[in-house]
Length: 282
Length: 271
Image 1 (cartoon, rainbow over the protein chains, first blue to last red):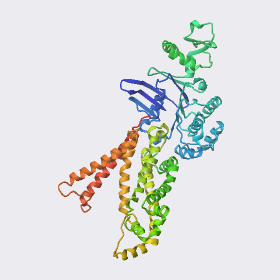
Image 2 (tube, each protein chain N blue to C red; image 1 turned 90 degrees about the vertical axis):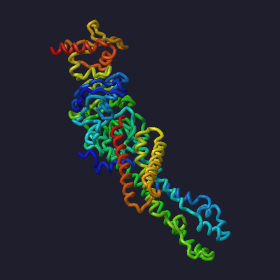
Image 3 (cartoon, one colour; image 1 turned 180 degrees about the vertical axis):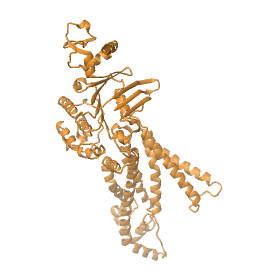
Image 4 (tube, rainbow over the protein chains, first blue to last red; image 1 turned 135 degrees about the vertical axis):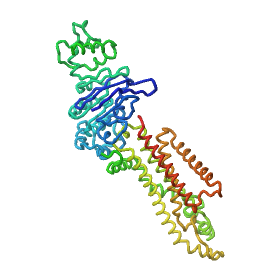
């Protein structure tokens, strides 16, 4: 469980990146962390990992304070960064050293994952491309079997087949005891996988809701006749895409990208969405 | 779970350090051999004359006599400079990682274990260099003794020096233990400054280390002189046990504070 209470963070005095964020992130979910560039998504992940310390408020991960960087917490957390920082060693050396630091590390699973991602297990990490190294890091992160996996742009640098492969592997290894938080701009790569949305905008966590709940409130339509009733619409090459109140409880595909655009492009969308929430509650 | 020190994790940490520095650590004996040989290849020293000027050996025994009787080779202790060089070079990769890498920061190895790793390897590096140096010195000096000592003694006798003795610095006497202790002491006093410089100053940490180290040496000597000001200035007065104990306690205190500062700096590091 990740508990954020009134979390505020700033790099400079009086210039908050994140402001009074409160949230409870529970196991068994894949959280999609969205936000425009520079809104503090990576900082948010770093605060959870204990790489940055809150200016105000608290972060708790499994009842421990991440900034203390205790081994008990670190051995149950893995951060897959956008930049790959693996040492230039042979893969088996890398695994034999670091794998043993994670109590639930599964060697067999690691090599299976490498095979599924078409990485030569005898290779030297220094000779692998950025994308290949990223695959090794993802395989290692999944094989650690830790309860909290943080991913910052995990599909960046992966080739097209690997992106779908990544999706499959992640869904295969997602279990009820794990929290996975994925910060990404590539929503189309992962929209089938994410079951809960966290959206950071203007220093605040403006959305912290499951896709399931959101789908109860809104639906997505393409080239509809009732565009005048749309909460948000935009023109694309495929015609007009729009978001509507889900009056008829249509259980359709949730378009994360369109939803995110609505939140960031239309200042009134969030209040419209919140009003829907209110109606729903009534 | 022990969050501070666990032997299993410490062993993994040592293995990690080895992997980061495998090549450098493997090169240590070779570097000492090269350094030792280079010293004796310097003009006017034994190997230089044997290899480049062998005629000098044939032309008359007095060249030889001068070489072996008067030539001081005490400066071969300079080879011990490889100790700080290797310690700093090997720690560099490790510390840089701790400074910048998210991966290294989040690896489940405690800061205490990381500091132990750094010091244990420093000790190993120092001991390996000293051991190789002593082995080379023993072989070389024994060769010199068995080959030349009798003849040199004869020459000394002929020249009216029947009781000539040889001390450190000659071709027949090896390095004394006090030199080794002094080297180890100076090196290990340098290490905490280097560690701190690496986490405080991302650029030019070598320069800052040297500056801090010199500052420490100068200020220590200044303080010692001040303490002993009332009497004759002899900061290395080994008869004064009280002063020695005081100095040792003071040094250990400063050392402990430096390690503590390093520990906290690593703990508070934000990336």
